[in-house]
Image 1: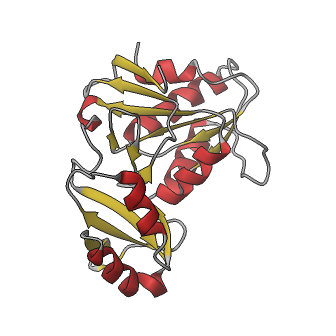
Image 2: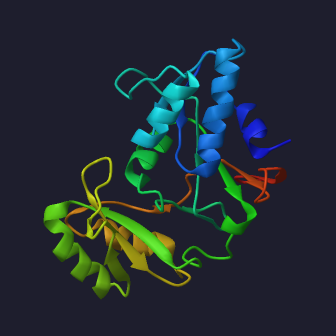
Image 3: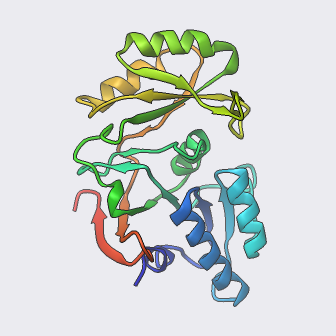
Length: 224
């Protein structure tokens, strides 16, 4: 069994579900589309990015917005880091704010990752994305630097990149984070910050697969 196949077992028929971003999440979208087209599942998907929206539409999954649905039964997404308490860093794919909103709207958040994403402490991979309002980018960069981070503006072809929300992302250089909750609160207090890549206490299930074909190697449950 793959992590994608296992994730499909968390999807109730007739449900509204969140569709995440990243390689594993898009593999989930493709297989979910196969089940939908076969008539095995009837769902509506709320995508976390324009890329996911396009992939879901191509897969034949009916789409909805948060205005169309109530509570989502489940959201299936990826992550860039997972610590031993199932805390996450997300946002390398630049969809962190929409991913957080969709996760908050869901009763259960299922995360799909390769084993290389498991870390002893958040920040081990050295990058924490922070989405900021463009007007406030210079201020945010100074404030984040004062917190001991090393902010670098995400650029595309030599120009500031824009998220699907029209915002900038400051990739903050970091080592292992001693107190993620404190750091998250300090960053969020900076005027102009829209969201951080720290997802603390958000994941309910983490499915871990190998790097080749998503073969399920481990399943972690919150409070298990």
